[in-house]
Image (cartoon, rainbow, N blue to C red):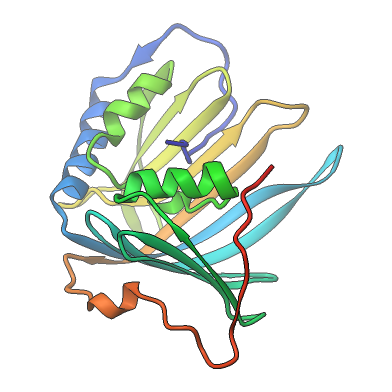
Length: 235
């Protein structure tokens, strides 16, 4: 599973796994492991290659609803996109509101594999859900050389725990709410590979926990005049 976090570029240092940071991450993972459904909105700022020596910032926002273990509905709005992704446990549908076109593909039977599959086969990054599974803390520790609790700060007036990590290819930061649920408030990843570092930042808000979402929101009914196209895998 792709990691989707980030931080300030870290200096090389001895491997360190801070027990306080791991405890906070484990509590967050445990909460997600107990949930039957989750909804939230996210705002993403992503550096995108525009030329060989130039990155531009791309902004998108999403409304996400997930019901475990195998359903999601994600509406993505961006500068040039207005897209829906619906997963009912066996198929994923992509629909473009802007162009009134859609495509359907058979998918794995669970959320984690489906999110991975969309990125691997189609280069679709639904990374805002990457922290929301029970083994996230263990997986992060396995992939990072360094994880540390950086203290308590505030975002939008909310008290949050600040955690950073690094390995040879990326640095990470997470800001996790200091409340009963330990939900992520913000994540930032800085990718260090390549000629230039680039970042992926996500802000989370409007959490809905254990809502009873109606099954039809995870199904797709083509609107009048919608044209079905073939979903091509990336090269």
